[in-house]
Length: 186
Length: 139
Image (tube, rainbow over all chains, first blue to last red; front, side, top):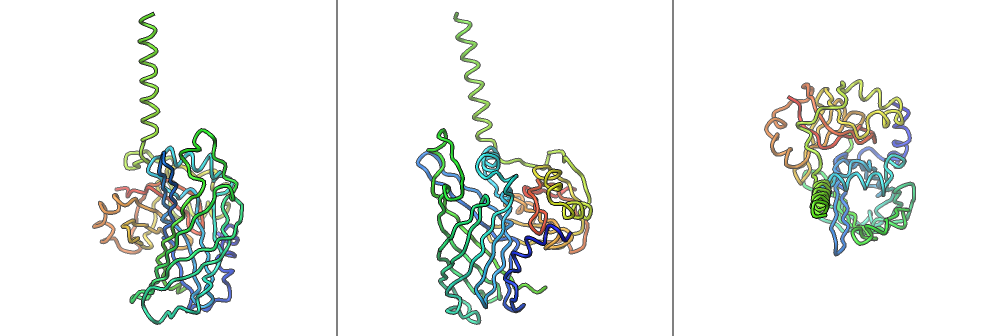
């Protein structure tokens, strides 16, 4: 059990000295992406995203398995994994960053708050800085909904799109994140 | 000559038919697919967690039928259910698609933690949990 998990947990818990009371998590977060061209719209969804959020420091990490992105057409899924993402060599993708305006959020007061996020996104072994905005919704139940949408350039992550399908796959892909965080009690 | 043209036409039509079928083929419905591997949840987890690389070679992309103890069920806002076997961090995470989630909602709602479950799905690899998708319940 230990060996594999170590590396991944080192990442998750590099949010290390967090106070247990301020640590939230989800294992069923949703990340979807959308590619739009006049020729074709492509979208895929991953509903098994693991993410941690520390509401004290604002630190957050996300991790996904590339193969857990599901497409409507199975051939697209195959091309995505084999031709574009090389998911055998790079099975995981991660984001590590923080909510920079975390101090402005009153976690004792339910409601929706605008957030600014800054961090590093790693896809196919390439890491780039991402700055985006989003919302955190503090629910009466104590759960927290986190949402954000941003765009990435496929070039920046070494994803090559063959000439033949150039008109069908956008160079800039829209990524949407939808996380339902619960208090981490372990 | 005429025969040749007809033959060529038939070839072109059937080839485009096949490629259109391939293109529009939806993601697999696993209910009727025979599993590549039948395994217990405990064995699957031990096997995978001891060596991720060999686990990936052995299981990724394969249709796995796994039996274990129900740890919990999570539902997303969009109505997608994820079933956890054995543990929620070091267990198996089985994602059902939304239409299927609705069709088995009453079964899921009435199932208790710790009860035995068999699930068939496609293995995608391991984060902290082994992840499977397109999962269906096995009677």
